[in-house]
Length: 195
Image (cartoon, rainbow, N blue to C red):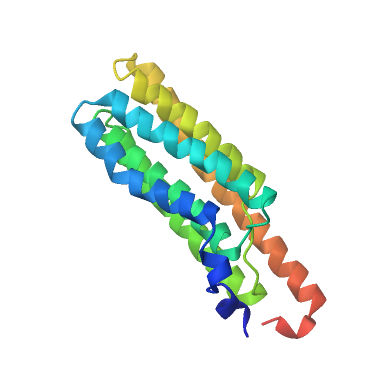
């Protein structure tokens, strides 16, 4: 059985951490709907619940030996879809979030393509790296402040949004170097895989 087929076994899919990641995806439309309808508290509660499930799915996976390649892919997808929804919601109030959407999308597509390319060459799903975790954590703080204080001074909202853009670009660069390192290691182990 190839590594790709092993990803889709019952044991890989039916785990509590994967269910939590799917639950986070279910919360995504509610984050936007509540925010657009000015029910900020409900939107923030959805984000907090999403963040808590994100925090605990990894702990549960390690504690009960439910780590899976599907989970390694699903968790960052849930992170980025949630992040994208928050950015779209904030764009209804902060105009600078519109270029943020474009930059965020380009960075995430580039990371996704690099990840798929690396997986095809190495045939191993890579875990998230520290730069990605720092980016996600910092983004939640930035977005939380923008959510809770929509009438903050423009200079402050601009500073926070620019910081978010810088973090997205930094994480992209860090991931590209990481994937390049994985490819080099793989080539050193098996010189025949070189193009």
